[in-house]
Image (cartoon, rainbow, N blue to C red):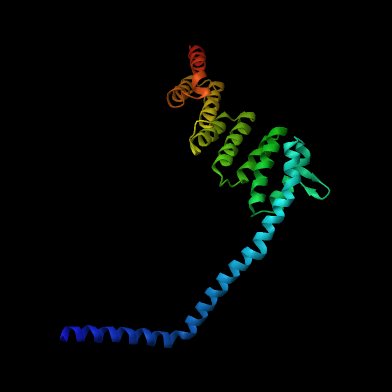
Length: 224
């Protein structure tokens, strides 16, 4: 019983210290609480009254640029016209929104189609892809741009990154084929053969896997 009384005494002392701390620091604690409340309400207000409307306006503004892109009107898609901005303007005007981010991707693809390869690389690198499929394609597109610039080593790096970003039977063998092709262009036939053999082993049921033997034979012939 004495032990239980001691425990009660210690607990009471602890509560007394806590109460005294609150009394001694209530001004500071009130300020901290007020800052916390203002921060939370400020964040909610910012999301509701600034971010959400901005996102909506960005989506509406993207419509014509996307239409021009689908029509293959690349210059209009990039630069826009009159009150319909293009991806170049949208990517900066709505920076921080999902649509503004997506505009970087569209802009990069437009530049790639126009043969403006360094501009394509810059735009695609500015794209922050949360969607794994689009992010994979954007990475592969950077590889394409580097290949067009004659920078095979950089292209291979991005093709491998694209192939391994989200392994699947659709895009992974496609980018691995591009890796092997880049190796061949650089005269690295042994490296190309290893990639072709990987495709045959891991993706034999895909179109690339079914056709890869002829590429292996070609690379074998070239290395002699």
